[in-house]
Length: 402
Image (cartoon, rainbow, N blue to C red; front, side, top):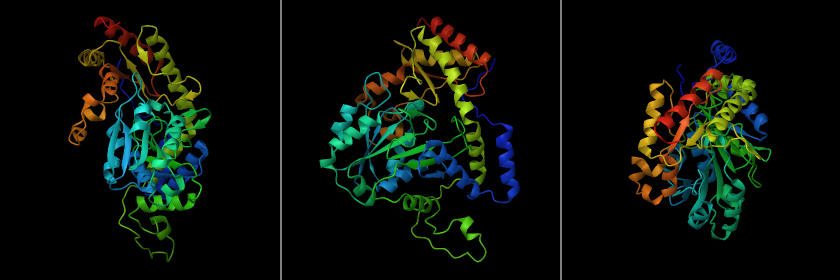
């Protein structure tokens, strides 16, 4: 029985909506993107959303709206994917990496507090696997450091403190204390990549909480300019009779979403409750079976958390990185695709070259060395789910790890 890692869940509805866009003659950014943005706002309960080409573009857009630039420091966790960190480099900021707490995928908040100085402009937390980070604690920390903060620009002045940003690549659809991801941090970036629990094939979005003193419509317009070369009119507006005239306000970027991508997203949102419910069922089956064997599992559905269940991460107590890799190979021999999310940033060449060393991040390494990402996707059958459970336990026992 073959079990892939995370194939997309595409139904006839997505196909029909994409076909409709293709037949419309308007396939790039246009009315369907606006519809998708409106539906994102309705689903999350936020005022504005901007759909973009990726979560990376969304996170970079957030940093640019905050006004992060040369000499400004941004703190990110060691345990994340490069897309959390690379936008800091793109905007000319100085990257700072904080180790996670022992036994956790979240930053060590005590260490984080000590890292904040007068140059710190933003903290990017990561909702790994769909589990929302402790933003309440983050807000407490940045409020306690307000006396160090030196504002530069309208948004920073309005905030009056270090900005709290969420890398919500995994958490579109998650909630905590009844509040949806996208409405918790000052700014949130979402991913709709092909492997995500809601996909547009490629794509992302940025949302934000209303900031007193900053107009939401103005921020929306600024993000539109950022995503379309700084051009004062998008293609839809220019297409109106006699409305060709435009200006370019600054040499910006090209990271807009297309109607084709948005059509997939609109269809996915119509089916999304069912997709999340299926993930929950599969993840709970994993959790119950694996914890009974002493395997440490990511817990997605413990109140007040309601996670997307985007990733199911397990850690095998006492396993070395080599033994972990052997289990992944054993599972591959059974045609079950497993993965590892993620190599900590300081283990990657790009960040080694910036002077980071994994020896300075021991907790992140401990989380990584015995971690395996178990396949989970909404089209997974009960039989596939049971097969993965059976074979994973079997492989761990064969290696003498449980």
